[in-house]
Every structure is written in C-alpha cells, then in structure tokens.
Length: 181
Image 1: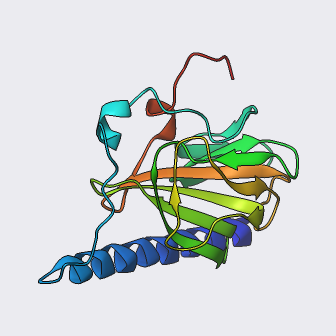
Image 2: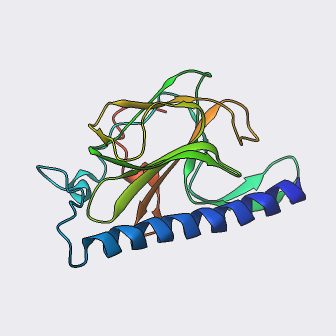
C-alpha cells in the first residue's frame, strides 16, 4: 500500500510537469503569431464556480486534499476527486473547451485534459475509452470518455481534477451541489 501511495505521488508530480509543459506550449504558440488560442464564447469558466455539471453520476469515493486510508491508517493528498461509476458510464465535459491531451498517463490510466480558457483545465482519468482527440472542441455535456478502471486502485471510477494555471482546485467547490451525492 505504501509503495502504491509513493507511485501515485510520483505520477502526480509527472502530471503537474505535463500540465506545465502544455501551458508553456500554449503561451509560446500565442507569442507573436496569429495562432488561435481557445477562448470559449460567453461567460468565462470562472463565473461557473458552484454551477458546473458533474462529469459522471455516482457517489464520491474520495475527496480533494488529505485522505486517510481506514485500513492502513496512511494518508495521501489528492489533487482531485474520485466518483464511483460503472465501467462504460459516459464522462461528460463540465464546460466548453478544447481537448489539450488525450492518452494514457501512468498512475491515472487513460486521461483527457480539456482547456476551458482563462488558464482553467479539467482532467478526467481512469477511463476505459477516450472519445475525443487532441484539438477537438467540446461543449458542456459532450461525452469525452467512458468510465473505466485504468490506473485505479479502487475499481471502476472517474478521477476528476480542476486546475487553474497548474494549481489544483477542489472540484466540489466548482460542481453544482443541487444533487445529493
């Protein structure tokens, strides 16, 4: 169990490096060129704090921040949440954006990262299938992946993060609380 926690911490650091690299590439492409940087029309992502749809239906398995494993009494720090869902359940984009990354990533399985503009990104992991390709635009509610258990230690679930300029944010502060989870 401790080895798995250490491996997840390493994967988390590598994921942060990937996000930083992707952000740097976006900024470099924008400098001195007429390359189109994705900016969704209408209100920005930041105006939807507490109003975003859930990417998948299901109970929350683990929350953002420090979590204790009740069996081993060890702690880990999560930069996202895990939502239990059956294999093959549809994972939906929570807001308009453009797919920035869609591939396997060690520790997270198959992931899709969506750029929502304003430096905001969402990451959905442990997918069984990725349904969008890098560069594709998505609208809120579009199916971007299917739930799986790739890279998961908890069985079928969705790992979900929200980041602003690489900094992880608590997804539960951004998702609509209208439904009891």
